[in-house]
Amino acid sequence: MAFTSVISRCTFRSVVLPAALVLCSSVFQAAPVPNGTYRATAYAQSGTTASGELTHRHVVAADPDVLPLGSRIKIRRAGRYSGEYVVADTGSKIQGRRLDIYMPSEEACKKFGTRLVRVKVIQLGDGTQTATKQADRAVKKDVADEVHKQAVGSAATEEDWVKAKAQAKPGTAPSANPKQSR
Image 1 (cartoon, rainbow, N blue to C red):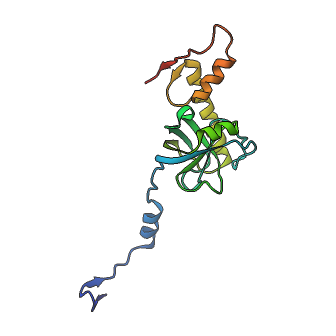
Image 2 (image 1 turned 90 degrees about the vertical axis):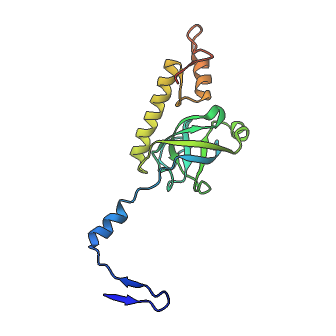
Image 3 (image 1 turned 135 degrees about the horizontal axis):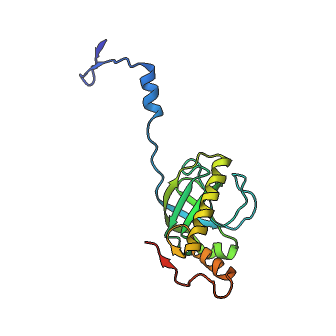
């Protein structure tokens, strides 16, 4: 069937596509990877997160439409808080490319303020409690491995090094200047 538009003087032909083709093309469109710059703030509210996990270091709140619960991310340009995190929480004010990093004290949160940070997605979560638990275990393992090997890389934050040094017995403390792994 052809028709001519009087306004544009173009000829248009209607094309009939099978419904399956139209459905497949809309289902398989790739979503953009949420790597890039985010505005980060910090929170010190202890308790249970949106995923059911308790708050602890290496937990962030994010917009689940951008970074679903259970996502593992690396945060850079966050000063002593740069490292590996799991998205285990959400918040009504956390929309778009915003993160809220859990810190154990209000003083640390105030000192952190608001910063533009870089995020690299290690693994995108599926929004479930199971994915969050698995990602949390993976982050804790990566941090522990890095501290044990005394290799600064990407998982452990400066806070992890301070904690490890404080917990170490005399003569076995992690080096003040751990070996660079890069």
